[in-house]
Length: 107
Image (cartoon, rainbow, N blue to C red; front, side, top):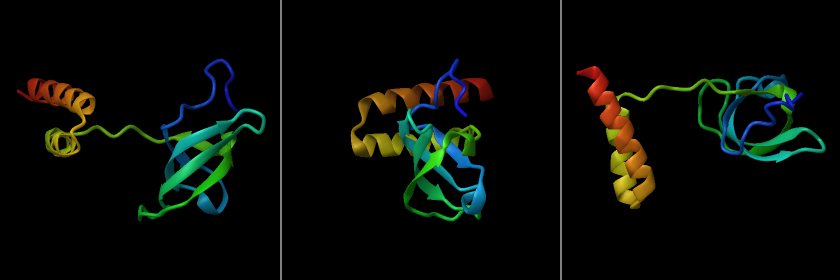
């Protein structure tokens, strides 16, 4: 059940499923149905960590926010390359800022 003090998880939030045949599948939220308390999940990984595709509606009690993964300097540099290729200025500035923080903390 959704904690109504904090509300439902936001669209775009990465989640892991916690029920039935799809337990430990990973995906991200694309929509929330307030009346049914269900999330529409775009699946990306199955329980074995292999790429999968599809979407489904899942009751909110069966959805857990996925753990946050810390990116290292190499990951951030790869993302910078992608932002330049896609000409995504805002994303570039965000990643560049993270990269600057990462390299400043390491030294």
